Image (cartoon, rainbow, N blue to C red; front, side):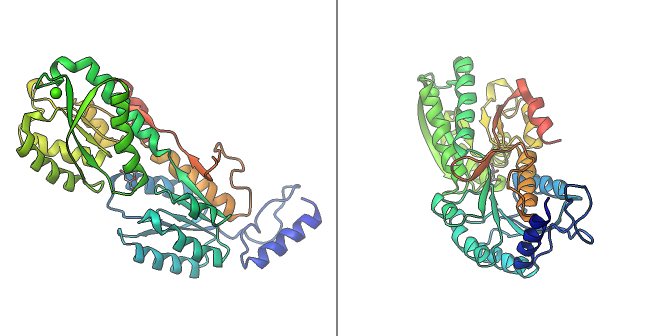
Length: 351
Ligand code: GAL
Ligand code: CA
């Protein structure tokens, strides 16, 4: 780096009131000044008590080791609490905010706080609306393309149905009678998975009939309650259980097993989830869950930390990374459909 560049950089950093980057090397490989100041990442998880997010949290913690100081908060599913946590982190001088919103619609409040202090924000897992993303040049998103998980889940369901129609079409009416347990209403993943999974089955030329649909709020316990009620109402008429995530697929499985299902071939009901958490991969191996879609916690955590460290140290967002931004300022980690045949793909991702 030329001398003028260094001066400009230092002035810029002083103006920001932060010394981050002082440990950067110049072209000759010597430190520009003093001890490196650690980057501070201020992060929130919408609630620790969410099976998939617990894996994302672990990935973030692991990725941050040795690279930055991490302040991690459990927002306990309370948006007001999360906004307070953000105030506290700003007061503590974080260089970047990594935010898993409680309510995807609350992005403007977070952006307002960050913008005032010129702190970059990287949202993850719950995608804000485009208008919010466009309102601040220093905000980005790390996550997935929600629609893709629905399409992949629907493909698994359609393929399996075609192969097993003889057995799975219990009432022999040629139609697939399903129940669907939805994630949090209004959550982009929940809405897209609900729509596209079923659409994909229909696109494969399969006639469907929805017996029941309701939200289980991503939660196993709530899914068990729903499933208990549906089993007593519809019993053997249920030919498939579609769940927006794996936590709820496990909840549905618990309910079905309690009612005597899945103990042998004649009592089989196919269940599908999304996430590919290790508990569900085990159930797929046992033949108790038919399929899931890998929601790659490890790479989402990796992308989030790499981008956070880059922007916090004044580098280009994507410098030295494998990630690309799409037209919605988002880095999207791909989903992969998982069943018994490619189970190792899921296992490798959660190692
Ligand atoms: C989804 C995931 C769910 C839940 C949700 C929380 O991507 O599939 O299991 O963790 O995020 O926002
Ligand atoms: Ca049928």
